[in-house]
Image 1 (spheres, rainbow, N blue to C red):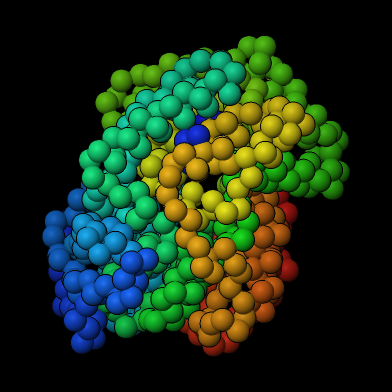
Image 2: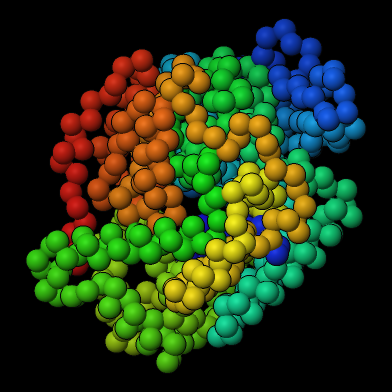
Length: 523
């Protein structure tokens, strides 16, 4: 997800709006069990008989992503074909790109881990270099896959029109509402193009994604595996537990996208303000920080005013073409950039110092964030994100909350107007998931072992939501005091707790190391 830099974080909802050398293995290519049809059957609204889809099969092939020296383990790639829309008996088949990262252990454990990417709308396979360095691979194989509509899976629902509009939004100091309208228009154009190309947008939602995951496991011949669900990956993990619990040995839910909450643009705005308040409180509780920086809220306002008076102006190279893009960053953009920065526990301690620099006209950090973040924002597969967001959240979204929120918090315009799911989903036109999707998973609903984590400073999935999920499951929320978004990667302690859970999901892992977790040491 984005920074003002990645403001399009979920251009997702934008826009939802419309309206953030391969080798083989003897275990690969096998099919699971004696099934003669897909592990996922569905009933349509017009037929009483389940639809028997083709048996899911893994077809090994060349790896489509770049396997450079950055990838330090053996990787096997392939595809699995699944129905685009399991509720349509005439649905076309689509292709999912899958990769197995081989453990470095001489005898890997038999229960691999599978990555459930966040977003939604980002590729896992493009991040293979980072995943290849995971400590997971010390003992287990690690599976990654590009969710339907993303990355190297086909069709790809990227909105090139919106990518251009995002770059355009960063090239001016126009009012955020005007920039948002241009991005919304680009999403309308993209939607029409995809439909003309034969894409069934109604097939791109979390229940279909969860069914894909079940089919991939069967196609790979994996008896049991462990789900690693962070951010949107947690929503996908919850739906998989609910609808396809077979073969699930354990589940990590981290920084949870809660099923019964709207998760719209205004919610992001409110969550951002909550995380800023946590930053202000943490600094105020540290005598040296308070003496040096005073009120963080006041410091943020001063930095934003500086950028409004003298916007940052620079150039960012397009990662695809190499051509430079002109960019201009204002105060409202800075708040969106702060939202993104609060994701990262390594950035949180230096934010007061960075805000002081910006307030004084030193834009070095702004330049760094711009260089890293705008390409990331434009890389999101916007139509997949919009389809998933709208199908998952349509019953919960209220368009009438946008204007009152912005009247009270106009500084949040850049963050909200590129994420206005509340006002776009009816126009996007995909049906809501229905059923039990927008309900909490409760303790009696499953016997799959689950562990729940969250970070104090998380700007997008507040710990209160993760706690509600944990409480409903009868679990303890493991809240890490120094973490942003994605607690399990925030410290050795968090990782060790999860790894102990992986080794024996039937017992409660030792969490005593959490007592030694330190608050941010502000610079």
